Every structure is written in C-alpha cells, then in structure tokens.
Length: 421
Image (cartoon, rainbow, N blue to C red; front, side, top):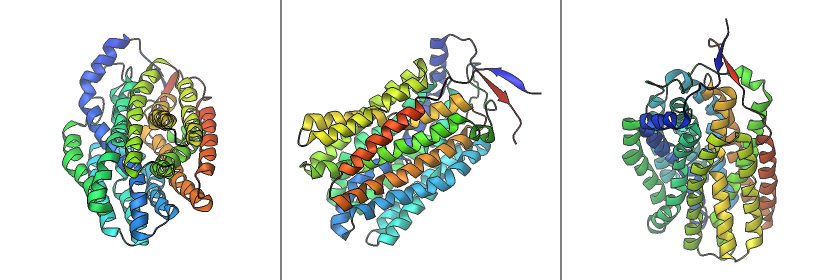
C-alpha cells in the first residue's frame, strides 16, 4: 500500500536549522573542498589560464584547445546517470575518495601529454573518467539528506567550494604557469588534491542522516527515476540547465583571453577573472538563503537574468574597467546559482528516493552544455576574430534558461514511498 508522507513536518525553523548545522558542518566542509577541486570546479575555472600559454608553446588554436573542455565533459555526459545510481546504492565515501585519487592521476596525465594534441585530448577524457565521482552529484547527496530547514544555505556553502577555487586559482596558477609553464600548473593541481582535499574528505564526510531529526527527509521518499522522466518539471530543468551552462561555460572559460583582447595585460586579466570568485562566493551564500525563504522559481527568474546583463555589459564596456568589473561580478553571482539551483530543485520536486539517479541525468545535460559552450565560443572567435557572436548567443541562452526554470510551478505537497523498481 502506498504511504503518503507529509512534505514538511511542523518544526521551529531556527532551532532545526541550527541543529542541522551542528550535526553536519564537517560534511559541508569536506564536500565544499571536494566539489571545489572536482571536475566542475578546478579544471573548469582554471582552463582559461592555459589557453594562451598552450597556444604560444604549441601553436594550437583557441578552438582546438577548447575541445579539451569538450573531452572533459564527455565522461560526465556518459557516466553521470550511472554514477548517480551507484551513489544511491553504495553511498558516497568510497566513490568520492577513489575519484579524488583518479582526479589527481588525470592532472598528472595532462602534464605528461603536453606537446601532442591527441594526447592532450586523451588525457582530458581520462581525467573525466577517473574523476567522475567528484561532480556535485556526489557532494550534494549527503548534504541534502542531512539538511532540510537549512538545505538551501547548506547546499550553497557546499558549492561555495567552486567559488573559492574561482577566487584563488587564477592568480595562484597564473604565477605557477609563468614560472614553470603549463606542465607545472597541472602538477600543482594534482598535489592540492592529494595533499589537502583527500585527507579532509576522509576525516569529515558523513554518509547520511544518522541521528537525524524529524525535519530531515527520509532517503526513500520521492519519485523514481521513471516517474521523474515523465514529469514536465524534469524536462524544463534539463533544457534550462543545458542552455545555462552553454552560456556560462563559454563566458567563463574565455573570460581571460576576452579581457586580454580588450587591452588588459595577462596578469591584470587573471586578477580580474579571479574577482569572479568573490561574486561566486557571495552568490552561493545569498542564493542559498533565498532558496530557504522564497520559491526556487522566483529565485531562478531573478538570478539567471543577471549573467545576460553581464554579457551585455562586457560587450559595451570596451576599455572601461568599472563596467568590466561590474559585469564580472554579475556573471560570478549567477555562476553561484547554477548547481545550487539544480540540486535544490531536484530535491524539492523529486524527493530523495532516487536523487542521485535523477540528478545524474540532469548533470549529463549540464556536462553536455559545458562540452559545447567553450569550443563554440572558441570557434566563434576563430571564424570572426571576435567574441561578439558568442556574447549574443550567451545572452539568448541565459534568458531562455530563466524562463524555463522560472515557470516550474509550486513544489509538490506530498511524496510516495515505493520499493525500488
């Protein structure tokens, strides 16, 4: 017999949220570091720093180099649905630690592959497969299980890891690359994963809601993957996140060369790109709080129009540093929304029963967008010697994503517990 489970027990908001954070802070810290260096974090936000040095050293075009991001994304596209199902069944810790080790190996392979374009692509594919368990699919599941009243903020703090990477990686890696070249940059990233992140994850990450209060959702409540696939909300989120990350990937990966083309020195361009991380950090926290207070659809409508405005400002800014800085801040604030919104909306519209499997499918759409966004922007530049076409395409994608994610409707008021299919 089907059992109806109340959407949200009546508990006092503030004590419940505080107790959740007392219980789960170490998991938030571990997951934040994990997602920061994972395949949607450090490789993504550092990719643009390598474009000019690789082009100068080996004669590769920006479009050819951008295909490395496509190769990175192919592994996530293919494996994310299977990863989500495996996490639902096997848990997070083993998959996370093995994948972090694989991620470090992948960075080392990139260092060894330089000089050969086919080997460069093969190394990115290897990194994608070896590090597949470092995506937000892995890190958001234990957080969504540990938190209910404070889920938006907890997910925001978890995914803050990418903002910290976006803030610190460009200036630090720029210095490393300037001294030791691209090979040294890739080896430095491998060292950070092994020496810093893996010990923290091993010590701090918890699997799920042991000792939970009644405010925390049971992991078996929610829709099956098949039920989610039959819903309008799933396809709106899937198409919306695809368009969102196409635009975000193209804008973020090519930000440094775009700024350099507009007269900034490589060092200043890297520093301004690093300021992207400040707004990502602010965006993670603010958007997380807003998701706990307001409907996610309203938050989506407001936030996803910001990067459209940011690209318009970049187009109009020319040599104006204040307008460029404002555009970067708006772009980063919206980047603080992408995975937060998808993770939060997945848990609210579909529940936790098949969270990994459903989120894995949505992350495949995310990865497909990332695979296309960077090379499309690069090819646009190669053809026209300008990023104007990429900017106008990005504006259109951001606006469409705001419409799709902003019209999902109210959260479901009940969930059905079922045995696994």
